Image (cartoon, rainbow, N blue to C red; front, side, top):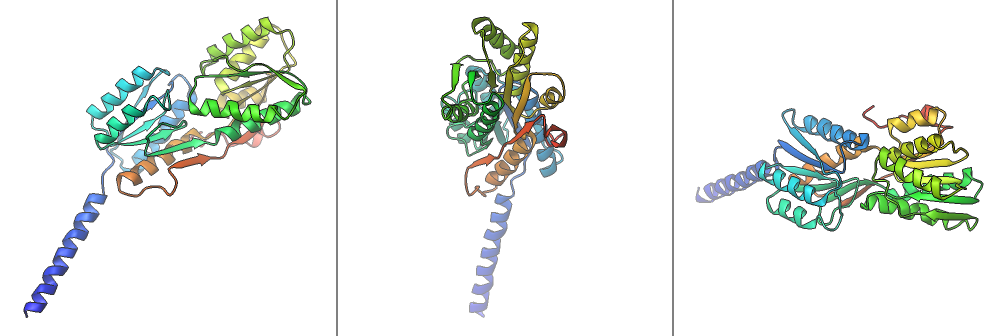
Length: 313
């Protein structure tokens, strides 16, 4: 009898632990904080939409608070402090500076918040979901080289020094380095990741350099700005390629512009993946590899009609 009671007691104890464990593992997702480079860029707006859709799928009452860091590190530090004060469960972080953001990441984690880096790396983050940006820069510049018959003057229009941009430029340079007949006239000017920034940078190039065969812009807004500048200064025969595959670039590829190709990303799917990975981490399930890279596809004038676009559209 005593033995039977002991077995029952042990079973009850084990069951208690099992139920406790199940309960502890089942953390609810209530609030996500999202801080991105710039909400003026449709790409980042789509990231927020993807995060919201996935959060609502996990919990219909989940809320997403999204803010624009405007590539300002101090502003992003404050935003993360605000998220900590608001007791968010998860932060999706598009870091303005991949290394310098680490103290803010650690502070959030110390408060029990899961931090998932999105689109660019962030030191110390629980996981990172991004495009293979080296490949994106490479396929975009391979196409550019082919279009200018592997010869001529090329501009690499740089941008905010986040890991995604640095990787794209490196990917592009690796490809162009294989072609001695291509000369890079400039590779360090910051087009600010925006249409206006791209336009201003391009106006400068066109004034300084009488002969430009091609321009690689680190994102679609800069590419569109560059095309506008070339039109204003009546310059043609320039091949522009970029990275993003945004709705605006679909229009540009279907109309009379200098834009010839863009290596597409899927910000909607990226954000959805980030929220799912973050939710799994909240509940004790770490990804096999904390660096999750998505493969870019090249969108050109030839295939744009069959391009599905960002999955939110």
